[in-house]
Length: 122
Image (cartoon, rainbow, N blue to C red; front, side, top):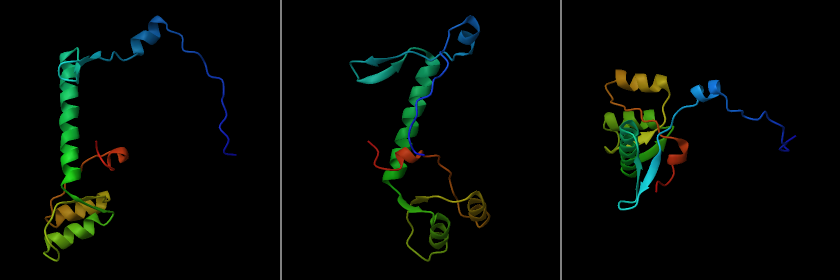
């Protein structure tokens, strides 16, 4: 059965004990002069800056590497041993494959990229 069914759920009641468990999120407001989001706490500002830097790094990697998919380990070996032209590649490898590459002297860098970012970045 693939039908979507709506089921009743318990209402959320704010009590003093539930408020203590809720995370306090920093307020973010738009900086109209720069068009950027600005956080109201120093810690949130650091997080926003770090996230922006991470996104720029991911965009750079995605734009300047060839995606070899699940053939990453084999292609990395071919490049390392001079069987094909040297170029920057990215792809997927199992933990065992990554360990084997490192043991062979092939440098690998794990980079967690959400599936939603693997397409064209904006």
